[in-house]
Structure formats: structure tokens, C-alpha cells
Image (cartoon, rainbow, N blue to C red; front, side):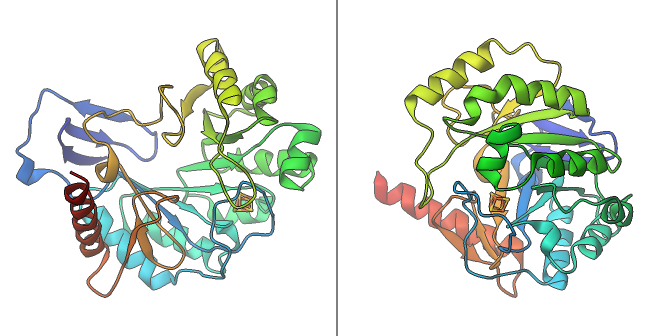
Amino acid sequence: MKSRIGPNGVHIFDRHSGLNVLLDELCPNEAFWSKSPRQVSIALTNVCDLHCGYCYAPKHRASLRTDQVLDWLKELDAEGCLGIGFGGGEPTLHPDFVNICKRAAAETQLAVTFTTHGHRLSPQLVQRLKGAIHFVCVSVDGVGRTYEQQRGKQFASLLRGIESIATLSPFGINVVVNERTVLELDAISELATKVGASELLLLPQQATAVVTNMDGVVGRALQDWVSNYGGKVRLAVSEAGASGLPTCDPLPNELGLRAYAHIDASGILRTSSYAPVGAMIGGAGVMSAFKKIRNILKIKRETQV
Ligand code: SF4
């Protein structure tokens, strides 16, 4: 069990069961609030073997070193972070992926999670990761032919990957919602139930050099679908583009940098993976980069007034 002190009270979290308990009758003084965001995503590498049009990962080759990642994780852990999510690119393509996950689980109290396209999760890789992973997010954009057109990979291969992942840890399904996938949300929800996913996370498509933001028509179809959702799998919508839908962020007083931050594969800390502004994490460590970002945001706010 790990505890985190913040504006909502004392948050107790068990990375093995995923249990969250918020003692909101406690009102800790601000001086004691945890300084780290609750959750940090880390792009271990920009490398990926797929070429999805809506991919927002930078395309230059960059990967983080094991020692720097472990140093940052220990700092975040000590400052009250509850979990880290490895991503990319495709994190399983980082040459030291298994070792990083194992050391993260053994040397910190953080929940260790990762997001994957699922095609590399062979039973052998899953075997090596056992005991080091607390949750996995698998990207499933449509079913059958739609999936194959969106991701350029066989749907049958994805299903084999999901079957392996199900033996590793609890897992969720992430869906980029666009004009194609919004029509398949029922089928994806049925798949999520069938394969034993514990969460269905909807990610409204964000603009890249190749695709536009999810448009208003798709947005309304998504709103309707969410309003009528009666599936068994827990549903959440990513903050980016959620526009009033129930999001995956449960603590209203713990938004922005208190809730979440992203470290890209070049070692730049950002408020999100889409954020244009960031601070390079230097020798002074990750918490020092947080201070820099907070100052940048403060200056921006002041100059906008
Ligand atoms: S699988 Fe993920 S990282 Fe790879 S190209 Fe597609 S969206 Fe980008």
C-alpha cells in the first residue's frame, strides 16, 4: 500500500489489486502535499514497427537510458507518484524493456503499467515480464477489417497478443475514436467483455500531420454512445477532447500537473504528450524539471492576463 497526500485528502493505493481509498475527511496542510503528479507516462522510445496515421509520437529516433529512467522513477516514487505508464513508440521495442519494468517494480512502490499495440506480446515475453507489471493498456481501434486498415496489422495477431496479456496482469482496451471506429464501439465493447478487459478507455482522435481532430459529428455520436452505454466493462474517456464526457480523472481538485505529466523519449518533461512546451530533465533531476514547467506555465498565465 502506498499513500499520497493532496488537496483531496489522503489517497491510499494498492498497486497489486488496483484498490484506491480516498480519506477525504482529512485536510492535510498544503506544505505536506505530494509534489509529484499522481501518474506519469514515459515514452521509453520513439521506435515503432507500425505506422498509424493518428500516431502523435515524434518520429525522430530517440530512446531513454535505463539508468536515467530508474533515477527518475525513484525520485517520483519518493515524491508521492502512484504509478508510471511506459509508452512510446512501442515500449516493448526498447532493448532493455523487461529489465526496466522489473527494476521499476522491485526498486520502487510505483504501479508499473505500459501501453502497447499488443503484437509483440508473445507467451515468452509475457513469461519474462511476470511479477513486474500491474496493468497493461492495449490499443484496439476497431475490429476485423477496420482494425487492419487502421493499424496495418492482422486482427488475429492482435487477439493472440491479448490472449497472452490476459495471463500477465489486468488489462484495459484503448480506442482512438474517429469516423471509422465510432461505428464499431459496440463491437469493441463486446470484445472487451469477451477477452476479460477491466477497462475501456476512449481517446478522441487528436490532430496529427496526417489526420484531423475528431469532428463534431463523431463527437455527438460518441456522446450518444457513452450516454447509452450499458456494458459491463468500466468506461472512461481521455481528458483530451472529452468535452463534458465522464473522464478517467476522478479527483477534481487534482488536475493538470498534480494529476499527470509526460516524459518523452528525448527526456523532456511535458504537461501531456501533446503539449508543445516542455522542460529538459537535466542532472538536477525530474522534480527540478517540474519546477521549471510550473514557472513557464505561471509566466504564460501572467502574460495572458
Ligand atoms: S502503434 Fe502506437 S506508437 Fe506505433 S505507430 Fe501506432 S499509434 Fe504510433
